[in-house]
Image 1 (cartoon, rainbow over the protein chains, first blue to last red):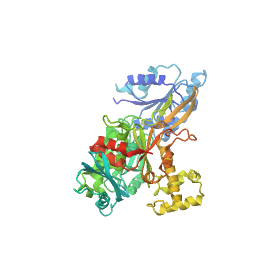
Image 2 (cartoon, chains in turn blue, green):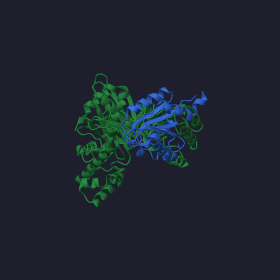
Image 3 (tube, each protein chain N blue to C red):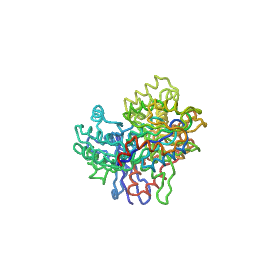
Image 4 (tube, rainbow over the protein chains, first blue to last red):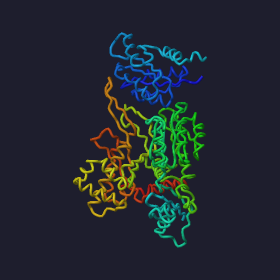
Length: 140
Length: 459
């Protein structure tokens, strides 16, 4: 089976590096090729990285509460640059304050993300989802 | 005496340097007009005749040359994303000493092919995709390039998974087609060395002949590299030293020419302050940039336009007076300043060229405000702490205002985000030997280093 490639990064002016390292480790251990663009990543950097590496997924983290400012427009830019169908996952502390997660999830799904994860999600959850979404379980 | 003859076939001048390996001294330097149209040897002989021959005649142990004649090594590069593999390809070509005519990104279009035909490059560099990444762009671009009417040398330095396949496609039309390592094997990893060597190899196996420079090769051993590659090689040697002989440490070389201004930096460029994050592509330790719009003669108009009011303010002249002087430069690219005013004008133009070229070469720093306070983000090289700047090229060597011109490299407190040297000492390549020493490095690196340390003097 061909190794699947994902672009991992912390979007916006967010400098949370530790969670980024943990995700890098967890996804690499799970057999993915991780292209980690690190913290303070712009939307363009996610897209450029995905184009060059022919990535299957964008894995966007946002820990500082400003995800609602940093994430809109990413799907549209992907469409514009020819990778409109790429899978997009987002997770972390996406919004300011304690808000009802269902409404947060709705907002991010509307932005074009395929999956949205609440604070405190363990890497196992998105890994399992990825295997499902990429049809990897079927191939074994 | 062990005399070595070193020749630089330039676009306008053929420069000759003779050194004695035993005494580690320069015996003589001379220059004459390059005669590419008739026989490249004529200009060389004329230059050589200016250096007094010893009674027993010349007995050169080595004869080496570099060349930027007949338009230099003209290249076109292509990659996938402009900021990633296309930028990596650009750096590989510049590092190989090329004159880069154009850089394309994404898939080549029929218009792009038309402009390649028009530009007549000597070599094409084809990149795109990280190893195991995007495959389509390399294959599609290879197909498109088969639409060129004539055969061209092509160097492939893209996704290794499809390199061989792309080469097979290209070989239907082009010869030679050389496969080098990917200029960006992993995202954000720059690996230009293999492509640089491949370009250099094609240069002396194919380009020399195509340009009619092979007539000189009967007399010489070999035209080893493009002139800018020789300068970059000399810069590396001078910075890093050789064996126990120490170099000068990190340095920058600024070469102001008639058509372009080249800047070479041999420096890591790491942040000089704590808690600065680096972003963007990693920088090559030996980095060369070329500014085609910043030159003293052929590009004087473009230079004046880019400098704009800064030039006028610096001179304190009226716009008409500047215009008039520019006209003279344009009329006669060979013009040597006649009056004090003209000398002053050249100083001002040189200063602007140096200042702008170094602005573009060095990195920048910006403040990003995060919820946790201000953070600094650096793109490119921080050269604020760079200790040594060396000037070379016509205007810096022959104009008495050289140090005034060279001060264009200095950090400007009004533009604190541009990371130019703050406290560098200025040196000058007064005998104009850097390219020659890059050549000499190939056969006698220690002597080349010692000669540079002797003849590159403090300003």
